[in-house]
Length: 364
Ligand code: PLP
Image 1 (cartoon, rainbow, N blue to C red):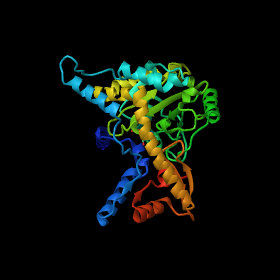
Image 2 (image 1 turned 180 degrees about the vertical axis):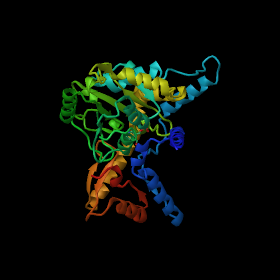
Image 3 (image 1 turned 45 degrees about the vertical axis):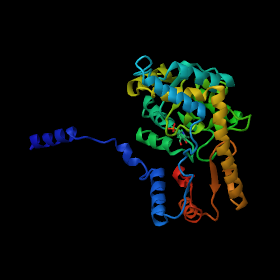
Image 4 (image 1 turned 180 degrees about the horizontal axis):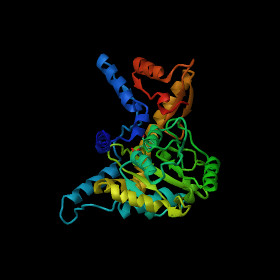
């Protein structure tokens, strides 16, 4: 009998056990559910043209200069003399330097190319960053929020650093210098780390609004910043993003010793990631030139014109509308307590427009 029980335990130990935190996740991830409802509508009404504004995707092609650089990168891969195999996991120096200069130093933020880790997406980076922090860490997340922060926090077994996203997805709101200074001061005082997602900084119109957390005093010792070319330069299908971790940023081991966060992330990145493809990095570098910036701005202006139109139209119907001024997102208050999924169905059914239900971003 004793032998029998022992064998049972052994058997259990050999089974593949799951990460049970996954079972705590809300059943349907928001975007698949939107996709399902849209497909159902399409099948029932094939004659209707649907305008898709649900998942934050882009519709305009890559800028001409970006396409030229992309082609040149591909041509280099076709010749033995210029072909490239594995590149540096953190990204090529030409791109990291171009980013540091254009996105940071030109705005007075002292960031070096060496602080920049190029990747294939901010979705992965904002989820993966949690791996280098202790599982008992508590993460403060805004509500409503980009669902990836909350879901990846649950996957990592953390119940509760601090995730900020400005300009904000989904509300389109922005944070002033004064507000961001309060967050940075808090993080410095409490030895916390701010995870700052600036995926939409290029949409900021108001000259007083900071584009980077590193424009704020003390932030290099308090924050990690995530940026993506997805919305800025139409790279949602091309894939390129970057994470910035300044040399000065430290976290602590269980003995209270300081550990450089950049060093940990470098270890993780170089072990689990093998770099973004060379032609994509060439295409991305074109975004950070004067001409590239001008071309990309034309596309951003186009999206912001759409945003202004949506804002104005919804306002004229009497809806209270937020965002759309320094961000491509518009957050609408439904009327008479209508549930957001009901408003989604109404918008799809009557106007053939796909939005995103607010409830998918959190209880608030
Ligand atoms: N961060 C925010 C706030 C987003 O809205 C999105 C995409 O919608 C991402 C990150 C993902 O960006 P990427 O395409 O680089 O993975």
